Length: 333
Image 1 (cartoon, rainbow, N blue to C red):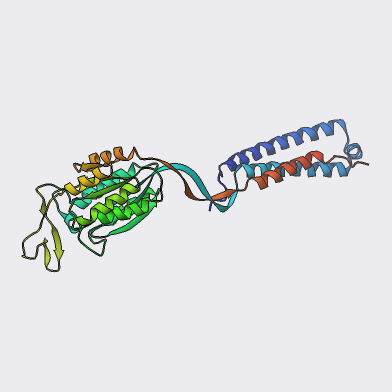
Image 2 (spheres, one colour; image 1 turned 90 degrees about the horizontal axis):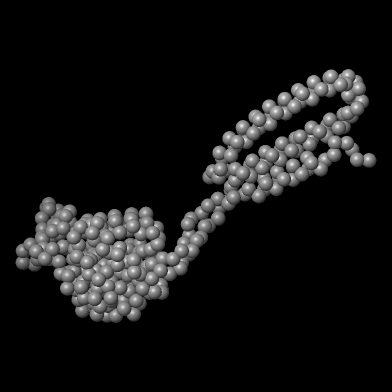
């Protein structure tokens, strides 16, 4: 903890103290010189009682102490913590990323998943007034990051996603849509689901119901298709080394971009389908779609800050200076 919010003020305190000390010494020298010229030591002692000299010193000490406390107040002493909450307007978005084995195909360099993560990372970097959550899905969808405004948390959790992040394989677009709808349902206005996948779907029979849920919750789907129509083999690493995924007949599995389901999802929810071309272009295209979302007022906690306690030394400083003014040099009879 930093005890003072503005410790630089003490530099001015030191400069002021030196200046006051020099002026005081100069004034005292001139005063003593004048006294010696006008009075003898005995006559001056008779004219100025010891009580008056003592009171003058007390007044000086009180005044200088008061000035010292004023500088302490200017330095903003702080202790104790308080939560800072502010209100801003936010749009709401869920990012759903396909992490099934087919996303390991390298028809998009370096592979589909890494290319998608790069584009989404660029997208997140550009967020300023968005609340965003992250879902990873295969045949089931799993929450990776709840809806938040914490960009660093979003980036960290996104970068950690890989092909072994989830305990099941396969692909179900409906599972991602359903979970996203549950997360976005409490928020009013138009919201978005950014769904990034190669379009393969092993449970297409569930899509119609998932689309209905998304429409009922005013969620538009921005579907991003990644991969090529020509497709590529799926690299795998086994105990015997690296190779390619094979079907039951022992033939290598070819995975292709299947964009028909992605287009249907986007069209049915008033969204848009985006074909991945490059990370930057894809990020820009998604961002343009999210700009049209409704913004809703919400409170955000900015963490904890130390409480400013300047009032205490300020009160003490004013009290000491007033006391130095009110104390008379001579005792009032």
